[in-house]
Image 1 (cartoon, one colour):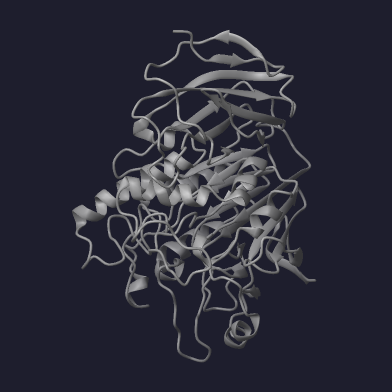
Image 2 (tube, rainbow, N blue to C red):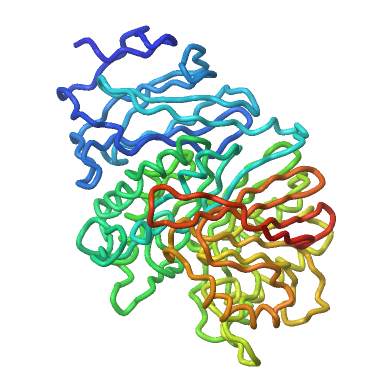
Length: 505
């Protein structure tokens, strides 16, 4: 049998490659688009998944399928730099993860796939600067929390039009909630995802959104998960509701969720799940300008404490001991001007009630106080250059100075945290009651520098002298067309920990 033909630089054919048996493929293979991720100076991961029936398990035959790929220097694929063939396996949902090597540092590339007679949409990606390069600037964005039921991905449409080196997505890529008939958009299925097919269908529903596909296709993403990719507020092998999910059932659910997450993300083979384990914490370097330390604050954490007193237990850990050692070593030895932590839940102390009574969400770092203080003291030890924590989860923007002791106003500022808002989660927000609640608490919280509860993302411009972060907000998540505006900017100066300036537009 004559197999599929390799694409040539001019869009014609160049050579025949062997074909798998099994007959013709279904039509509509590339319904989920393309993506790239985890850029290195000479490499990037490119991704797709063959899914002609995305909300029905994928709709592919139960056999492996050859998928051709190519990476070019130009949009028309006249100057192809790398090409090859990958197998889309049914045991990985017919997803394809290609770790393309031999690329030039700090360069833009275009990529696409072919299976059967169909060619995928093209994506654009970019490699990182050379390891010892000293780039003058780095521009990237971060985002999180995109509940499909809460609204449209209007923010992603605008995000895709930014000029960025990468996007860091900090968790809650999908939501595990059941379909809500009263929601703006309704989840597929009949309940929460439990099985691998359930999670595949939920991811595929999110991935089918055209604006999310645009955002993925525009630049490489650096991803990590939080809780809703598995189960709300899960901690290691403990679900949110252990009285309703047995340990065995939750372990099976976690393994299914991990596999579906990997199948839909542009991750390297090192992140392939092995049962209950999936290595997501990792480090990416952008020359000598910035190192991005990607955290996993779910898989290894202690169960959430129930009281503030219990939160001071030194045995509690958000990261586990091994990841903490990895983080400390990487921060100490990064050699970068900026050390950026891609993190899921808030580090800064976040009281939820005005007045003398203290009320905290102990799922955040407020529940893991001894480890937090230990790490923040390390930030202030002189061994870490310019630490900035970027955080998701809150569905609000919270910009804070970081101190080892948030209850002591004389405690030194050792870093900055920018907690970004959500893409959709929370729906259209009303700032009035939000500020009525939190402005009095802000007056009692000197480390808070800015708060807001509207939807969007954050763009960060980094130079050797400063990091300027711009809060980009959309007017609505309930219309396909919406304007985007810069609502505020936050300045961190090199050598000066904390937030130096907040500018409101």
